[in-house]
Amino acid sequence: MKTLILSVWHNWAKSPKWAIDKWASANNTNEATETNLIINWLITKGIPWVKLIKVPLGLSLVDRIAWINKRFPKELEPFAFELHLDAWPITARGASVWFLDWNAYTKWEGGQFLQKYTEITWEPSRHVNPDTAGRWGRLWFVRDTKCASLLVELWFVTNTQDLKAIRLKAIDWIIEWVKNMNIK
Image 1 (cartoon, helix red, strand yellow):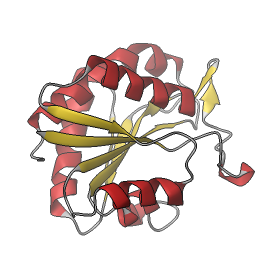
Image 2 (image 1 turned 90 degrees about the vertical axis):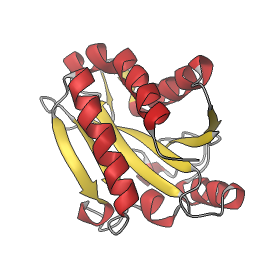
Image 3 (image 1 turned 180 degrees about the vertical axis):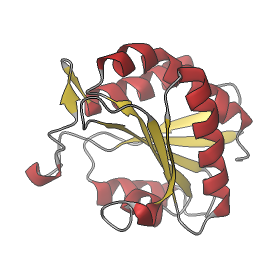
C-alpha cells in the first residue's frame, strides 16, 4: 500500500505574524482555506490502495517537518506532499512544483505531476524547480523532510478563472497521479 502525507503550509494557530502570507488571500478565500479543503476532500474521497495521512493543522514549519520525520524516518518512504497556492500578481496563472535539488526521484515525480496536471486543468506550467532556485535559497519542507517530498503551487488564488476552474480538477488529478506513483 502506498502512503501519502498531506501537509498545508498556512496553518493558523502557531504561525508567527511574520510568516502569514498576506498576499495569499483573494476572491473571498485564502490559501489556508483552499489547501485544507483540497486535503479534506482527498481524504473523504479516498484513493484505492493509498493510505492518506494529514499533518495536523496548527503546526509551525519546523513542527510539521519534525512530525513527519518522527513517524516516517526512512528516506523515500512514504511521500510527503505540501500544497500551496500562489497569489501575486493578480493576472498570473499556472502551477509549479519544487523538488529537492539533488533528488532525481522527486524531480521525476514532480515532472510527472506537473505535466499531467497542466494537461487536465489547462493551467500553464510554471516549471519543475529545484528547492535551491527559490527566493529563500532552499525550501525547508523539501530539504529537511526525510522522506521524499514535493512542494506544489497548484494555482493563483488571486485569479478568479483559476479558482473556479481548478478546485475539483486539482483533486481529481492528484488522485490519478498518486495511483500511478512509484511509492510504497
